Amino acid sequence: MNKITEIGVFESKTHLSEILERVVNGESFYITKRGRRVAELRPVEPEKRTLTRGCATNPDYSMAPDFDAPLEDFEEYT
Image (cartoon, rainbow, N blue to C red):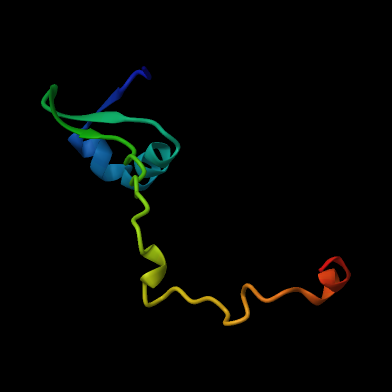
């Protein structure tokens, strides 16, 4: 497991953009207030999406009407 860096509230406010860039690159931080950990800043786990039956019924999904029509390039094989 990677070591988690501790930073104070003031430093985290002052350098938020740089800290967020480091988080995007996989680094984690504990934010401390008067030496006591009050928050953890870490990369978000990617959302795990499962495919469901009928996902092609989504209104944004479309398929050409001739999707399964034979291709002209392969006529000699039929």
